[in-house]
Length: 111
Length: 120
Image (tube, rainbow over all chains, first blue to last red; front, side):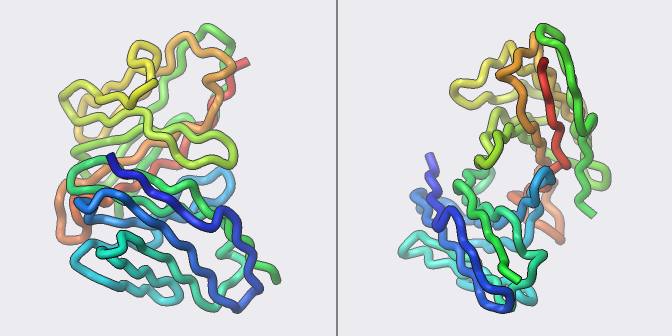
């Protein structure tokens, strides 16, 4: 089955700087890669996703890049703000299968 | 759109009792619903996958007789924790995968707000 690794486990960034979280996956059949943001005690919220036919996707301050050859994908947050502090999870899935989540990254934005 | 509700949000029960958690997709039809549990500072652990009208598929190590899942319609799935024990205390989250639409692919999952279960 799919195996997803996520790094780093914790990340502290000065407000206004950029944050990058990286994930690798094992199953070359995976074609859908969502990123979720989870605040303490709340549900995971989908913030951006990318499919394997695209190499990069951007939504305002958030972008995701995908390298299918190397089987890795990354989340980029620019101009970070205190409300970006949360735990971020990457995930990967082959078509019509279950999501496999990374272990999460706790992002702290330092004011 | 794509709202998933979960009820109750919190439940405290005595050891040995059963607890039912409901998961509803409010504004879309879900072909598949997933049940996860999450321990503090850990990732989401998939417990089972449920498809409307068929038996749930449980992940390895998850007792199907203890965690009963029913998916009676395209908008409702229930998880019943039977004979709950303190070690079952956790944050239980459901998610729903929508039917194909112009807005989302078949793989997009939307999460419910979670249920915090405490077994005394």
